[in-house]
Each structure stands twice: as structure tokens, then as C-alpha cells.
Amino acid sequence: MLGYLATDMYLPAFESMRSDFDTSQSLIGLSLSIFLLGMALGQLIYGPLSDRIGRIKVLMGGMLLFSIASIGCTFAPNIEIMLISRLAQALGACSATVIWQAVVVDRYEGKVSERVFATIMPLVALSPALAPLAGAMLEGHFGWRSIFVALVAFGAVMSVMTLKEPESANLDKKQEKITVQLRHDYKQILSSKKFIGNMMIFAACSAAFFAYLTGSPFVMSAMGYSGADIGLSYAPQTVAFIIGGYGCRTLLAKYDSQRILPWILKLFLTSVTVMFLISMNTEPKTIWPILVPFCLLAVANGAIYPIIISKALEDFKSCSATAAGLLNFLQTMVCFAASGIVSAFAAHGLMTVTIAMFSTGFIALIGYSLVVKAHRQSIEHAQTA
Image (cartoon, rainbow, N blue to C red; front, side, top):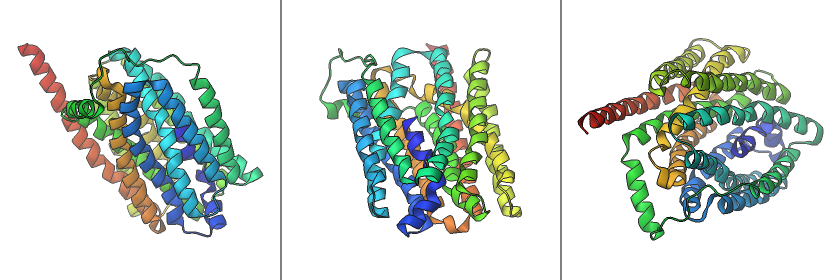
């Protein structure tokens, strides 16, 4: 949740920050894109490190870095210092992202793991609804810098709570030299069609989401919406994400995930296609013609995430954090690219956002084809064994 809070809480303050720093929309949008870059890079470090020295020590270090960087954001005198602080903030926040997924894989297997992911992820998704509302309220009463003061406090609370958690990593196993171990683990992970396919679906769905998050504040500002309105606009999509997540949890009790996934993926593809067609053929005066299909996308994402994350990681029990770190690195790099493109062409408004979102559909289709191929190969292998 920490990464989502740092991503979502300051979105309603984009225009205030742009005015305060006397900078461009593109550079303010870059503060989100560079955060995604930091989230991606940090997980390549935290994953292998937590497999080696334990989850708790690594998570504590990440929380400390996040809090210090949030102080830097609070007192940033210009956009350059803000961008540097946002990068450091991301490098701290991503420790929580990679480690919570590894802990689930450490403790649970198979359908139980999928159901645990389906229980937790909708709760994490409360952030996109509550964080912008809280951010808009803080900005309205105390100015945009108070948002980062709140993040400092949240980081401190998370640090205290982390100290109470038991270690879940298996640290008794014999450990090879870290470079040898990493080479072995990465070769094993990246040679898996199942991992790559699920990662591509995860990346595509997330990139569509972040393309919207990056562009929507500017699109809504151009339509005449206030910061408070922008914050409120994230509530429906979060409710939709929660419905998708808990709906998936219910379906997993009755059906195999391989039967559920193609239907959810069709919903995602339909959503991005409808948004693309609306922007190409009309000029919406309000956000609703875009927000409604985006809520359908949020339902799809809420249902897809638990399945694909669990499936991507389930074969890598011995290096679960390394696999989770690599999964999230690759996913976040695609999000960074989508967010960066939207930021660079923010002046073109809604069309840039929907073109970026529509493009992610092709990535999802390629990923699904790999998932299907890997599933068929596993069935054939089981039949011949």
C-alpha cells in the first residue's frame, strides 16, 4: 500500500505544484514517472537481498529511506530536488511491494495462495480512492507540502509495525556466492514461459492503469474540474477494483483460474478499446464517458492481479522474493514507459492517454498466448511422466 499512497496521494496537487515550482505539466508528470522507475530498479535489489538476509531487515531499511526521502519532498525548493527526492522515495517504498508478495508465497501454496492474494489486493486498492481524497483535503487546508508530511508519518508507523512481524524467509539453507545464486535464479525464472506470460499480462494491465493516473489530472483540469473533484474521481474505480478482487476470490472457490482468466482479459481489452474509440471519435466535456469504461478496466485488473501474480511466482519457492522483485521490476518498467509517454505528450490531452492504454492490449494478448502455451506443455509433461 505504501507505494500506492506515494503514487496517488499527491495527484490532486499536480496543478498547485506546477504553479508553485513555476514549471511545466510534463515535469510535474515526470515526478510520477520517475517514481515508477525507482520502484522498478529497487526491487531488483530488495528481492535477492531479502532472500539472503531476511524480509524484516530489508523492509526496515526501505521504510527508513522512504521516510527520509519524504522529508526531502516536503522541503523541496524546486522541481529538480523534488524529482531526486521522488526517486529516493520510490527506492524505499518498493521494499514493501516486493516483500509482501514473497511472504505470501513463503507461507501459502496453490489455490490458497491465489485466494490470499485475492483477499489482500482489494484492500491495497483502497489507496487509489482514499489517498487522492486525503491528498485533496490536505492540500486544501494546509497546502500540497502537507501531503508529504503525512507520508513521513505513515512511513514511521509502518516501520514500527514491521518490527512486530516474524521472519518468513528460510535462512537456514546453504547460501552460495550471491552472484552465482543470482545467475542461477534469474536463468531459472526468465526461462519460464509461465512467468514471462503472466508478467506481460500484469505489466499491460498495470501500464493501462498508470497511463490513466498520469494523464487524468491534466485532462480533468482542462475540463474545469478542481483538485477535490479530481480526488473524488478515483473513488468509483477503486470500488470497481475491490469488486473485481473479491469477485475473483469467490469465483476461485468454484472454478480453476485457467477458466476465469480469459473472460477477465476480454473485459480488460474491451475497456481499453472503448476508451480509445471514444477519444478518437468524440470530444468529451466531462470525465464520465471515460470514467465508466475505466471502471470496467478496474474490475478486470482487480480480478486479474491475484491470479497472475500467484501463477507467476508459484514455481519459485526457493527464491520467492527474487522472483517477485523481477516480476515487479519488469511490470513497473512497462508502467514507467507508459507513464513517461503520457507525460511527454500531456499537451495532447485525452488522446495520448487512451492511445497508450489501447497499446497495452497487444502486450496482454502476447502474454496470454505464452500462458496458454505453458499450460499446454505442463499438461503434456504430466501425461508423459
